[in-house]
Image (cartoon, rainbow, N blue to C red):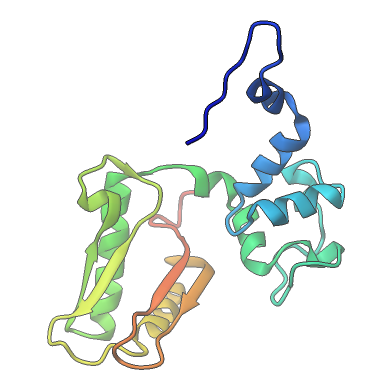
Length: 193
């Protein structure tokens, strides 16, 4: 339990924090996908003050970039993707677009395996009008082995122009382990992000 009392004759710490530009910048950087508070503070200490400061780095998005050191090492590849799509990743996804994403994943899955079934979960399943992301569960109706289907599906949907950038892909070591992918997609390639 935390309580904060402000007396009329004192300065309220919460109001002071809201006015502190350093904390505002760290909070902004923490909104980049994959950037936590420690990385955000490190970016601030290195002299970054705006998202454009980070974007101006000529090597943002280079594969294999690791944190630390300065320059190209300031962001990982995934964080650079988070910066690239910063505004889009903060937007809510309308329900109709979540349905389009679910359909695209279902079609792509069944093109690879007729037994694949994709079901949209999360906020959509709970009936929300918009979602922060789109959670899709893929299973095989016949209970067959799933191992390797997800990386193949990611390649397939990338080749079809549905997936644009990968944030993470984890594959199980056996047919009983979950596989998980997070990435950036676009349901209508004729529209900008």
